Each structure stands twice: as C-alpha cells, then as structure tokens.
Length: 249
Length: 249
Image (tube, rainbow over all chains, first blue to last red; front, side):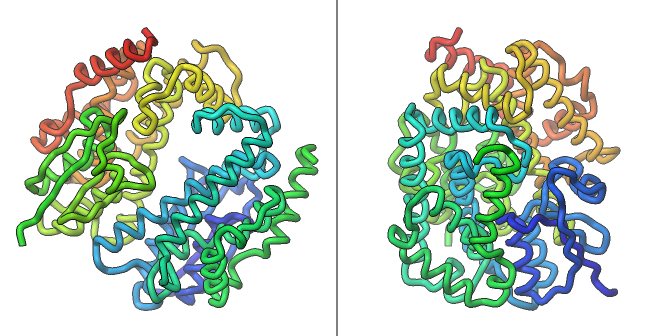
C-alpha cells in the first residue's frame, strides 16, 4: 500500500519543525498543509478535536497528535531508516525524560513579553492577558520584581537550562551520542528562535553556552535539519509583524 | 541478577500512584520511600536533580523520572507479565496522546482554590501566589469572573473533559479495550481525588458522568489498583490538614 502522509503545521512552530526533521531524516514523502492558527481549518479541528493544536500527522487517514508522540510514532513505523530512539529501555526512558526539559524553553515566552503573543496555542492573546501571565510567571518563581529584573531573571534561568544541557552533552557530538537522535530532534527546533531571544533579550547565547551553539551548528550540517528549520531572521520578522498587528510595537 | 527497585513517592500523589499500580500489576517487589516534599531527601535531589519531583523509580541504582515515562519503562523491562501498552505503533501513539489529557485534570487545582496549595511541585505555595495563579487560569480561558463563576466554569470544564473520556470509552470496559492498560493506569490515579473535588466543588461526578464512575469501579476491582490508591476520605483529610497549616481554613 502506498503511504499517504499529510502534515498540518505552522512554519515558525518549534514543535512542527520536529516532525519536519524526522520526515526528512526518514526520507518520507508527504503533503504539507500550512494552518492559519487564527482561523483553523476544519480538517485540523476534526483531526485534533480535543487540543486543536498543530502539528498533526495524518497517516493513511488516521491522525497522530503531539509532536513528541508523532516523532516516536514515525520512528517506530519507519524503523529501518535513521533510528532515533535507542533500543535499550533505560536509554529510551532517559531520552524521553530529557526531551521534557523543553518546558524550560517554553517558559521564556512568558517572560520576554514582546515574544509572548506568539503562544502557539492562543495566538490571539491580548496585552491584558499577557500581563497576567507575566504575573503568574513571577509568582511561580516566588519573586516580585520589575519588568527589567524579570527579564534578567528569565535570561539567567534560560542560560542555566542550557548549561544543564551542555553538561549532558559532555564531549558527545549529539545528545543521541555519536549520532543525531530523539533528544536532538526535540531540542534543535528552538534554535531558529535563538535570534529572537537574543535580540529582544539583548544577550548572546554563544557567549554563555558555546557548546550548545557548536552542537546546533553540527545539527545544521544535516540537510534534514537545515532544510526544515526556518531562518532565525525570518522568525524575527514574523514576531515583529505580529507585534504590529497586535498593537504592541 | 536480583533486581533492586526503589520508589521515591508521596502517598497522595496521583502521579506516584501510577507507578505503584504498575509495580503491583507486574508483581515487582520494591522498597517504598515516602518523601517529605517540604524537606526533600538528598536521594531525591540526587536522583532527579533537574525537576526534583516525585515519583522517581531507582532500578539497580539508576533513576527513571516522570510518572508516564516510568510506567512505559516498567512495561518494557518487565514485558512478559501484564503488558500495558499495545504493540501496534498507532495504538501506542493514541494511548500516549490520551494519557496527556491529564493536563485538564491538573488545571482543576488552579481553580478550586481550597485545593490549590496541594500543588505537588510547590507544596509551599502561599495564598498570594495562589491568587495570581487563579488570575492566570482566568486569563488563559479569556474569562474575567468572580470566584463563584470561576468555580462553576471549572466544574463545567472538568465535566466536559470527563465526557470526552466517556465517549472514548464507548462500550469498552477499559480505555485499553478488554483489558486494563496504559491509559487506565494514567487516569485512575485521579479517582482518589474525586471525593475532594466533589466536596469542595459541591457536585456529584457520578450524576454527570456515570460511565466514568462505572469504569473507575471496574478498575478498583483489580487488587493492583485498590491496594495502590489511597482512600478518598484520607486524601480529603490530608487537604484539610494542609489548609490548616497554611492558614487557609
């Protein structure tokens, strides 16, 4: 049977990019359908009725949701080429756990308030809600501080997470070891947002975490990655456009 | 080699209970170590240095973190007895995705503010932070309302999630089909909190979602479940004690 593969996605999504990378790694042909998150297609609503989120992989008419689950699914179904998850259960559990560190990356959206409106779940957030979310972030950290202090604290936390990742990387070329694997797929999607973080946050990730940047550049040497990741400046342009639309600039 | 299995846990945790159920299902002997979440053991901090959360399974000296990952890990390592996840990749992906619906259950903590302090990550939340989190929950739903309206809306959402689950259950005895499986393990832990929800929320889950209660009772017929789940009234007592300690009653 010919495989019919459709991907519902949104180009700046670091979650969607994971699926694009894996499909490229495995050499799977597919139809790409760009979603307008402010006007979601009936196909998206039908295929992911509970969460209504991209990415959704539709394989022979059947939907698979949640980027990390989609990546594992593709790895299992097309297991002959470019395996991503180790076969040992312990190694696999560790890979799954490390990929969950992503939450720390997502939090940064709640802090650089210029970036916040690009929450991929609620693209229509307004400034009022944004301020409430900032307050929450604040409170969850147990810190009451000014916006400037906020951003400094957020940068510090972000860098700390990257340093934890650097330690995990040690002298290995990839989180997967000698080869590009599941954790690499889950983390590299954030790289196309680094330029946005750096520009709004006015800091250099490379100066703080050179090993992470070296790792990202190694990943980018893979065609499956470089062709799937949008350019950082294009993502920055998208954020600026959105800020304009939302009256935040 | 004799297997050495240690579980770091906290008895009212609906995440820890998942692991207890699976260990019982598989007939695995283990050492249970209760954690004081306000004074975490050095073993917990050493075994889960990034998230510092229970449950942690320590298998032959090596830690596995995150309840859903631990459940999958145990299912893979002890695969001969009582398999929980289907072997078909598509069915497995669906099970993983359904187990993520848990987020909707966790949100209820942010709404019944009497319950909120029992956030298992930050057991030391104070009322100030609690109110901020409520505001966030409010804002994420795009609704500005009074506390009474809040709670009504939260109940409604909670019931809606249960109804989605009931639809998924259809006429099957378990989410896993004819047998108790991964999704059942992930969801049944919430059952011991139903009495707390109902009492603080002043509503009957059974009146709204009889199929869910019938499913939970079927699960409770399994010794692995009934012996692992704490009694709902004991959990309620724990919540009341905590409220007292935090000066919230």
